[in-house]
Length: 112
Length: 115
Image (cartoon, rainbow over all chains, first blue to last red; front, side, top):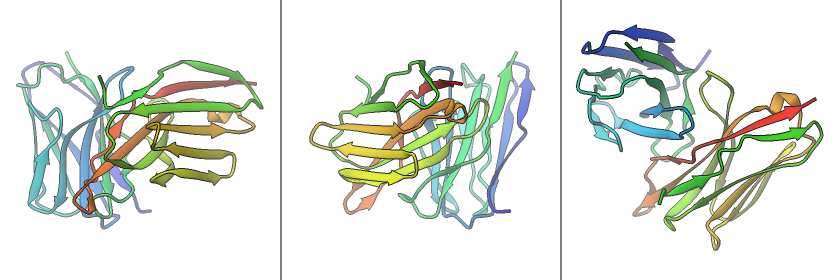
């Protein structure tokens, strides 16, 4: 089946540790996105990539890093510099920038 | 002031009711408007996609966009318990002649449809 796969679904980490969230899509989409969702809030854009080997910061990029070495993969690293990393992280993709965006099932990160 | 405002609810209605969900926005550059449905602990799924002003209907769902008032709505007819979810409005604008693809989301409205 075509879709967006995020892993792991649930992740616990100690404060001060970096953690990488995986996002893979087999939709042949050019654009990929990472959003963060906190309780009672909408989605906020962390990073986005419109093409392989290129990405741009979103509204809340501080404390996060990404790479886009392959079209189908867009991993997100939550670094120890991120002050409040506990959240629900959503990866998304679109055929072309501006086309309809489709989401993965999300990854829950809890930092203790 | 946030670019997109959405009443977080919660909104509770009896089964069969007509539901109206709304968002207001401040950026006149927004041209593309979407509604997503998100079940608890799941990723959002696209319900409706509308370009510019007007209405769009899909089954029990109708999306309306009024660009002059900077106001969008989603109507759900004959609401069902399975419609219980959080509904997120989202919109994006253009840079030159291209859609930037960057979605700005409302906070989401939690809907509960009681049997």
